[in-house]
Structures are given as structure tokens and as C-alpha cells.
Length: 280
Image (cartoon, rainbow, N blue to C red):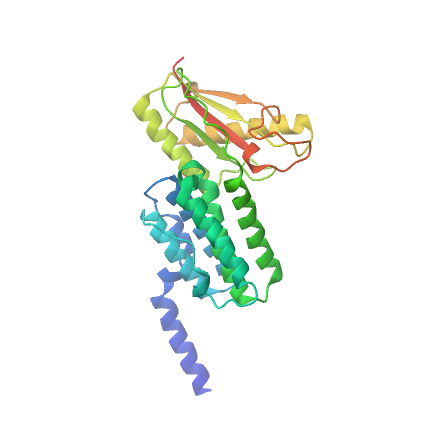
């Protein structure tokens, strides 16, 4: 009984002292600095920490929140080293995966595909953590599959960069969406916040917002979904101060894919909204 009472007393004090350590909701309120990759990495690590909190894995919750805080502060955050985790059965495979990831990150992935690069890094760390625990094959597979899907995007042959159109006074922006949804992810909101900053500086004549989908589903449903995605972006921008009159919304459904596929193919790069500043 004494041991139990002591445990409760110590645990209560520990929880009080470490509340900030596991405060996923508090970390979500941070305003990340740094480049697009660091902002996306912040959102990815918060998501992993939130998943660990849901499993009552407090140690890894705190660990991934620390990585999220570092990314939010604009610090360089690297993928975990395989030797930092107690992994035996698939250590060589994981080490090979990390080598490929580092090669992509040290190349152009951080700047050319920041959201995908961040997804690859956080998913790799998630995979290592689940391999170390070793008792949840479904979670191991989910993290590994997400990592390998992101790596497949990063290592695909890059398309030749298109010349900047003369009619566009500022940059072009692309945000992606989950399958069948028009919900703005944290990294999408971060991109839209950057759009707002550039819009206030550049003062373009109008902002073209074009919604797109992949080829999963029928043509009519996809056209409506692309419209909802464009409207979700416009609603967010309007809520942050961009007048509706400054925006021109377009919806293309599955007709203008960024990556050509067959019918019924899940392609994250096609589930997107493209935003362009135009001078007329």
C-alpha cells in the first residue's frame, strides 16, 4: 500500500512538472519560422507526437515534440540514426532507407519538394520507433509504407522546370490534399500564410486559385471536389484578409493532372490546388 501511495505521489508531481513535455496542443500553437521544409517538418512531427500520445507512449511523445519544436525554431533537424534505436531484425534495411533519405535531402528535396521531404523524414523516424517497439506490425507497416511512398516521389525523375510566365509577377504555389477530401493540412495552411505575405508585398491584379483531383472516382464527382478544394483555399485566404474580389476560382477535376496516370489511380501530386498571381 505504501509503495502504491508513493507511486501515485511521485507520478502526480512528475506529471505536473512535465505537462509541457507532452503538450501536443500547446506545440501546435507555435508559429514556425524557417523555410518551407522546416515548417512542413514541424507539422509532420507534431502529427507523429499526437499519434504516440494516443497510444500513451509518453517518452516518444516528448521526443517527437522536441523535434517539432526544433523545426519550428528554424533549426536543422536530421532523421534519426538507426543506431540510436534498439533495432536488430531489420537494422540493415532501415540503414539503407536512411542512406537514401539523406541522399535525397542533401540533394534538392528540401527545396524542390519540401512537403514530401518532410513527410519522408518524419515517417522514417516513425518507422524506426515502431521497429524498436516491435509489437505493433500494423503501425510498423503504416509508417514504412508512408516513408517509402514519399521516397518514391522524391526519387522519381524530376520534370524539367517550366520557365516563369511573364504575366506572373510573383511565385506559383501548390498545396495538396488527402484522398477524396478538401481539408487543409497544417503544411497547406503554412503555404497559404506565405501566399498572403507575398500577396501583400506584390499586390497582383488577381489571384487565380485552381482546384484539381486525381482519377479516383467519377468525372462529375471529381469536378465538384476540385471546386470544393479551390473554395477551401479561397475561404482561408479571405479569412486572413484577402478580399473575395481579388480571387478568381477555377475547377478542373481530373482533366489537368500534374502527373499523368490511368483511371482510378491514387496520385497525391494530382490532388492539389494551384495558386498563381496574375497581373491582369
